[in-house]
Image (cartoon, one colour):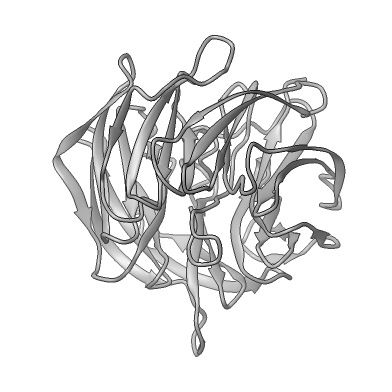
Amino acid sequence: MLTLAACGGADGLNGGGDGGFVGGARDGGFARSDSGGQLVAYVSGYGPNIGWYSVDEQSGALGSKGSIKSIGNSPSFLAWNRSGTNLYALDEATAGRVAAYAIDSKTGALTYVNDVSSKGNGPAHLSVDATGKWVFVANYGDGTVAVLPVTATGSLADATDTKSPGANAHMIIADPSNKFVFVPCKGADVVAQYVFDATKGTLTPNAVPSMATAKGAGPRHLAFHPNGKWAYLIAENASSVSTLSFDATLGHLAIIDTVSTLPSGFSGSNTGAEIHVHSTGNFVLASNRGDDSIAVFSVDPTSGKLTMLGTTKTGGKTPRAFDLTPGNALLYAANQAGSVTALRLDAKGALTSASTPLMVQAPSFVGVLRLTP
């Protein structure tokens, strides 16, 4: 049983590659479980190792449990299947690759299984579909995406399909029904829309093949609301979040409203990074790189539109990915300048510092998994 979270990217220090249904995209974005075994946090980024850590649910402290050398030097984004048996890691290299790992159900330890081509350059993001039979990967460098089959043992096979949705493909996720797939393309200012065949592992451009954003906005990550009617899109260059209507029958997105992720009076440079929807649907959270903060928004229950409640510093610099634990009590932020920090989230959407920062080499991803007991 898994819980999800976080984001990575394909930009090293210039942009990067999540979001999903009810808080994350580790498995395509499905609802979290609040019960089960121990919590394990996985951390990776622009160092060669993928580490796993125990999670103290009272204090928020992380304790090192182990690490594994990745297949390359930049495992900047991770994802896992719904059952929590296998983890997948991209290698953000010119000739991108994706590796499969088995997860020990008692300890969370990883064992390498195999790796295959991402079918593109500089992969930024990957996710697992609802069936666990397919891994989607977005290649930021050349604007391509691929569908990778998962075998019965959890290993990966060569891609069944590839597409070219647009410049700087930054994320790829299925909607909650697993019928449609979406790709925010930062360099093209569109979100590509596909129909997904979960039997063949193929993508077909939707009748409306894309949703355009404002010119230069740089759409980066997408997260669905639990009611299935709305989604939220963070724009990297514009430091904004757009509320989107979602037609779950046709698989079409449309912009309803757009708000800034920055506090009033902010001056300086900033880019938006990650976005999550609170499991209650009452809040949306987004990370700011520059202001080095998490912005929290309330959600209007009728329109889905957002109102900013405030921003809170993460306690580190350049927060890329972040994740919420089951029950949403704790938030972990991967600060690319060298730390993972914990914040406590209350029922009113307020964030406060929770524990001592964990020092990690250039982290871009943090995600929390509830192990099967």
